[in-house]
Length: 402
Image (cartoon, rainbow, N blue to C red; front, side, top):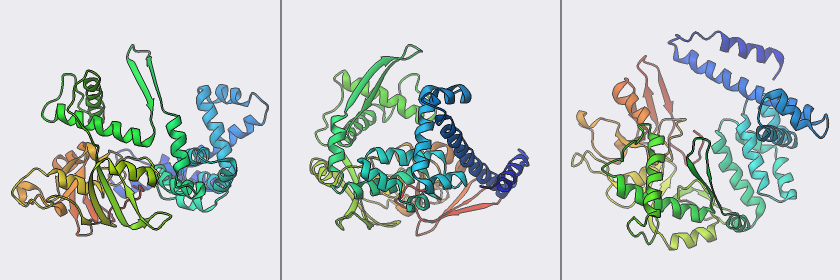
């Protein structure tokens, strides 16, 4: 990004009036700030590279100059090395089109490959184009596909390495709290998560223990911790087989031409291993074609017979919305409520085409702060804000690009 472009962005950000009520202006300034942040990230990398070139103690210089920890300094230097090895992505960062987290995702992906494969990945200029316009999480999904292609073994070798790297650490934090820190292979992780979810729902479906926080994310972490304690104390109902919602998207296929299966665990499981896991699970198969649910188990339309959505409807919507339906909201689907787009009190039905998963914050925005939602048949969502401005987002996509 040249000097004049940087200065223009700085001026736009500095000119924002905090009391400005013009949504378009605020959105434009937000985009300008994001581009500036990416450019500043690239400056950090350029400075780190220059410091590293001063000698073997360049990382110490980063620590003293930037007032960061040695660990953070090492991360900046690692990020700089990746940007140098992948110049197209480095240029996108310098132009403010991506952020440092995109570079970190490429670093993570390269570590999963042998040196020759990593060099091929880093030199792929098309990845920079793929990163523009999607979140780091969306870029991770793109990189996961490319890593599997380069490995050529459907990810089995990497899965075996993950199994060898299972670890659990315990310790005491500065505030006197005992902590556990674990790393588990994807299949073990899915089983553990499923077991915790079962116990959490069994214990806290109708009550919460004392001291439970109000924040939805903190509340879920609190309840999950108590569910773990219950399990270690010998509690819990027997769960012989994990429950898995298996999403088959007809528009995506793997390297063999088979439909890609998603078990909603945010992990990559090689197809042969996934097949074994599914054989041992209680499957709830949902078939989608883009934003259309083609097939799903259970009753999906309840009409006015029940205000409360059923489990079948939640499973079906999980296939389309891994997170809150409001674009850019990272709250996971399991932490949302199913909202009636046409409100129940206004005659709305508890049918699939009238339900959206919303986090607590956005649910309150709709019910208490004047947001109005309109959902079209293809699940295109229009949000009308209290000032009359609108935002329209296209149908949901299985790619994590929000």
